[in-house]
Length: 315
Image (cartoon, rainbow, N blue to C red):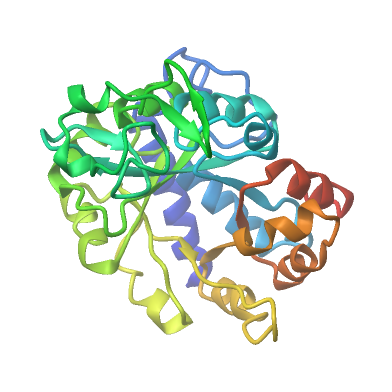
């Protein structure tokens, strides 16, 4: 019965890939981009391919790397602002990033822009003003920055611009948690830009489950702390990859990914609090992550994570 369900799910994922425009465009089936052999052109295909491999003899062929706010180590060292088009380009061209995590907020006049904080103070030279209190044109007066280094001429991008840049090139984990993003506005933009098969949406359950009611093909990315919480999402076709917190101190939830796998789910966690250890050569947290058998890892230092995973035969 489980195998039959999986078979029909794969067929359904294939139909979505054919029906959506997110990675299509040149008649070759790869969206007009040069892809690695076997590289999935849409997220659901990637998810189902990974689930299928987990049920095979060699389940751990690859661990996927997510660039937090599109950060990479090289970009950080070059003071490229987070959530900027410039840093997304670096992630795309790095060759080691499989997905970028981006944050979105609405301006006063309803334009969806990339910004993690409510205030623009940390990431622009505009001072202590809120995104929600500025129109898009007012926001464009300011330049983005990292720390005290201002990138002259680099503006806060719209989500539409990010979609145009990533289309056919990079998967996106879109973080809208507690950011007051209008559901209809975001859903319409994703559909209009042909990105429904390339974007997954991360947020709390209350707003997250609204997206499949608009279109069942929306891919949602819930945070869960138990397997039973994840099974509550089984009614949603696009809920396959779940984020959770990995405790590196006592390894109390080290079996969580394996338990999730038994339910046909994939897992996603981050080691952001441990990136500084990786930069200093301490790979203990990353090794714990590998032992946990989580499928996706979110980090600010993708190059280091990739190099270590590659040595372990997981890239």
